[in-house]
Length: 312
Length: 174
Image (cartoon, rainbow over the protein chains, first blue to last red):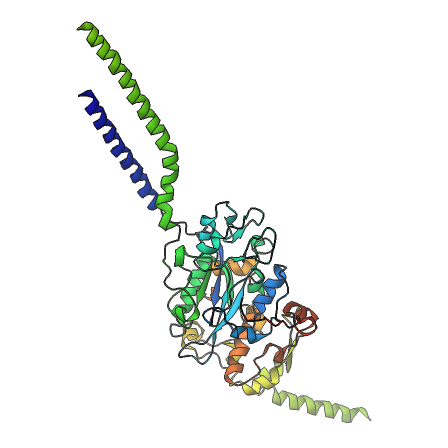
């Protein structure tokens, strides 16, 4: 009889333990997302203003001491370049942290130019995917990384929903990930706009606090509803980002992935990841305790039974 | 004896000027040409032929908004600027800041009670204003049609004397 009740007790405590574990996991999931530092900076890219002069590419090259380009920055034949059998336009590389692409859209005689660079997400999936913690989201909103910590595993390249981080394949020894750092060291940390924003002749890009830029973006749409799409790309996409876009043409015609969720990528695994430390910390203690209790009872049982036998 | 005719001459000229002034008050103040050198770091200064543009533009307010000319006709602007008044400051840099993203300018973006908190900078104002019109009226639209690159500019763009050697695999992907 005593053996059966002990088994029942263990089964019950296991079920209880599981219930205790699931509850905080759900709490972690509901803990909410990080929507950026309150005074984080950002850039609003108004694509209706861009004429595709590529000055931003040239300024980025100089500011970040990048290698000489294959073609001059005032060579506009690069807009005709395509990769992977015409399915892919230019993308940021280890030698160019930002590139401008040209799109012909329906219903417009003028092409639209789209500048691509790191979006500097509020809750970056590159950062959350990095197992050596090479990435940092700074108070100013920049997503930077420490080259010396990077082991070159390229998980961030897979994790990034915007396909931004590039890889220094040209480096034989110690290749690392390369991407736009919002000119953090040289400019943004000192309150100055990044080099691309600074040089842009048409002020396609507006530099400011992210929360102010959002207000400005919606004000521009409200004033010119026939000129703009009623959407600010980057306001909510994968948790929002420091860089945001206004467009005249539908975003999906300009290579934007409009199917991206509004939740940060990390939300998919937050519940599970929240459980891991608990499993590691609580389970050993819980089961050791149970084991000790169980064996202690068993020993007592033997003594009791001996005593009972003795009495009998 | 020789002085008197001179005085007559000067008096006559002054009278002529006095008669012309009320008719051409704005044109008299306006410069014939403006040297624009906000991006002189990379480009030669642009010579803006103001006199020619005053003839091409319908009215001063085409470029100067509500600062001079007949004032604005944009219903959006008219909500505040219906009482037309010639402003003391009519030049572009009077309102549009050369240091576009100074701490002061970024602070202005945060002032929600300020209507013009989204004010474009000087360089942006020039290019937005010029390019929009040039595209519509077939004016020059290439960068170097208005301002040629200087040596620093060619270095920055890797063009001219600094152009890279042509490579065979450029644009072929990988």
